[in-house]
Length: 276
Image (cartoon, rainbow, N blue to C red; front, side, top):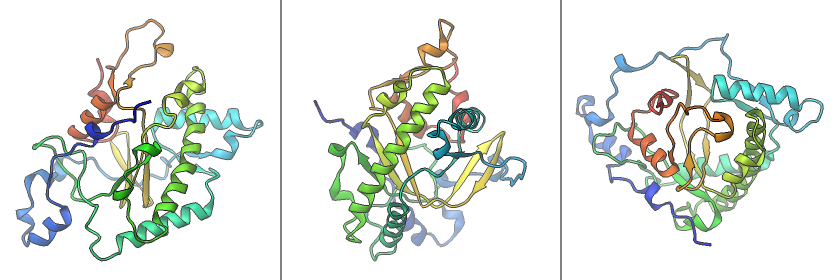
């Protein structure tokens, strides 16, 4: 079997490192226009006690006595928020703490600019975040570029390998429950994502968009993304459409990824632009 190729997804126009830009700019007015986002165009950031982030108990999803109730909560969270917090997920504390410690130690090393920057820059007009990131492909195993993984601290690579394997297992179970909630075979999703692209990046904060407002959440040190292979067609499931006209377009995952990163990203508004 041929090795999956991620070069087309990972191709990115070369842009200056944000940390280097910040060091060279004395006047805020000199910030390049592509990094400027007028406040007038921004949605408000609110803290609403009545709109708490849904919390899903992973252990209850696996428990015969509570799985139906918890699955219903997960379905509501996916439909209403598109986001949820997962607790009791079974990922060992040691794996999480080692990963956090190694990410933090790596970022604090001298010359830590290496490996950081912008990715998925596909247009000269694309609006960019005033931030750098480090993105590493962790799965499938044959797609790992170990040369790009930090060699320091010495435990980093082992920590990331262990952590990514644990998250793969959790993600697989969640996908099966989501499929059941949609009335399709559990393997419908898990097969699609079986040993397909998984990437890890370190991020500085998190906000979730719901109802036109942004809700701040506690900082996350690590974000992990799970995706299908790049040539897979994604769109409304035939089992759900059931002969009716689909409301959204279908496209390859490669096309979707390029569209995602070339558009102005503002949460779930992306779905509006994909409607037929």
